[in-house]
Length: 131
Ligand SMILES: [Zn+2]
Image (tube, rainbow, N blue to C red; front, side, top):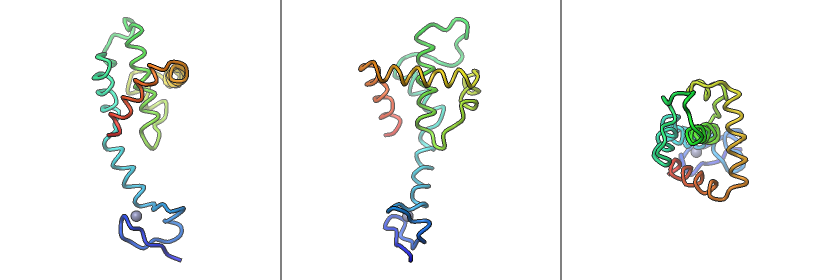
């Protein structure tokens, strides 16, 4: 049995059109989204939102706010980019190791769960990136 996808106007096999979703359309939507959301764009948006430069700052001189802004970037990169980049890849971009990235994601999730204002800020950045 074949199904017609109203989005890409082609007939699909059951395998490619599953639960009302067309694989081809899903893939192109994902590609479009990925083109919009890159490491660089997340990085730039956070700098714009927080006014903090998160790369190129002397690692040993990093204060709390720089560390936190960088953690937000790591968290959002892992959350928004599909397929999800490994913690090692994200770490390399920031000149950090994978454990730092995993720790950052955990820390940010924890902040989101416990601090309303922080949660709203992350929401705002995410919306900006997805628009
Ligand atoms: Zn389709």
